[in-house]
Amino acid sequence: MKIKEEMKDGVMVLRLSGKVISGPDLMELKTVFQTAVNNDMGNVLLDLGHVAWMDSSGLGVLVSGYTSLSRAGARMVILNATKKIHELFIITKLITIFETFTDEKVALASLKE
Image 1 (tube, helix red, strand yellow):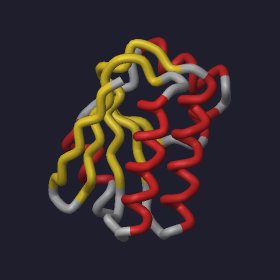
Image 2 (spheres, one colour):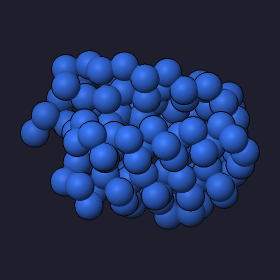
Image 3 (cartoon, helix red, strand yellow):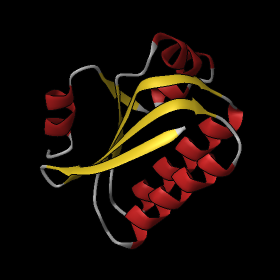
Image 4 (cartoon, helix red, strand yellow):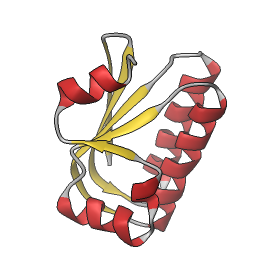
């Protein structure tokens, strides 16, 4: 898994690619979320458009990041979840928790509300 970080309109954009599965890369993602909370970086847009697969550990880190951000008063939304990832969110019922978007401008605008 690769993680690209950028700030866009005051929102931290995380673009993931590859497989979001257990291992050192997943710990890096957990650290990125924790750093965002610790440094009060605000809302996070998580782009999953290039994620091939995600296992239960990957889902766990997303939920953990979402929870940490929420407790800090920030929001996290999902952008471009692939069909496989979207189905995974439906099966696990996380679709009721994660706000998902297919348009980056709309997702960014939702985080400014």
